[in-house]
Image (cartoon, rainbow, N blue to C red; front, side):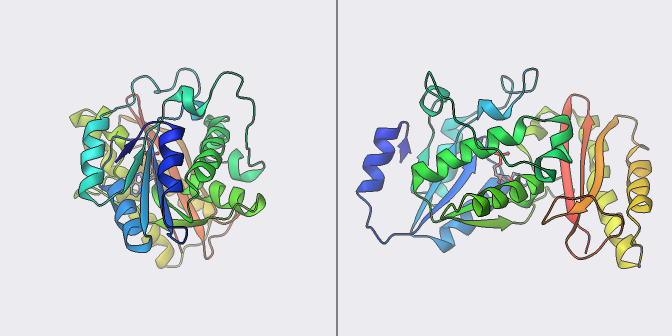
Length: 279
Ligand code: AMP
């Protein structure tokens, strides 16, 4: 059932059995199999599953792709229903940010300063603000996030810990296309040649992981290897390739358990993310 405003959401939640567990899957819509894997996991672990579809303006900076981001709510609703979602909460920006809105939630320090935080300094503040609202609004017991956005997951876990938000954050693995490209709503922006060249991302992180399995631990060596390999693709424009500790998001010199190799690379105007836990 589609819920378009706070009154519909509140009425629905109030009518639920008080003991019912609620799983939330927050998305920006234009669903693909990555989103659907989160829904499947939520469906297994909760009595009620809520999918939110909200293209959150506060996590986009001026000049980013807020206006061109792909949308198809009708398709999303149908896919969600097929997967057994109970409620789809799809509010408007005016509902989430009414006139006079003036409160933001921000995780500070390395969590939001490295990786995507360098080129998108206001992004995570928008993410943590909207997620605080969605957690409060849906009264969810669990929320499901993809490792595809590893930094987002780390930032959200930190926010929940620091702010004592009574919700369990459930990480879910990256879902890839058959050819290895990590699924993303933004993949629809890629032309054929860009998409072909973008396969270098998954290939390279797999090779980097193999280097580590073979005993390499030096962060500079691995980062240099990854950058050189990606740069063999003429359309690739690296935003960052970094290795950090996944739990703290701090820079490291040596790979150890929980080290995250994360990258953002542009192909044409499309900025793609990929990552792996190296060890
Ligand atoms: P988005 O709609 O891009 O904001 O993504 C909503 C949720 O789906 C986030 O938790 C993402 O990490 C997750 N997600 C997006 N792409 C994938 C993927 N390829 N595999 C797993 N989860 C994903």
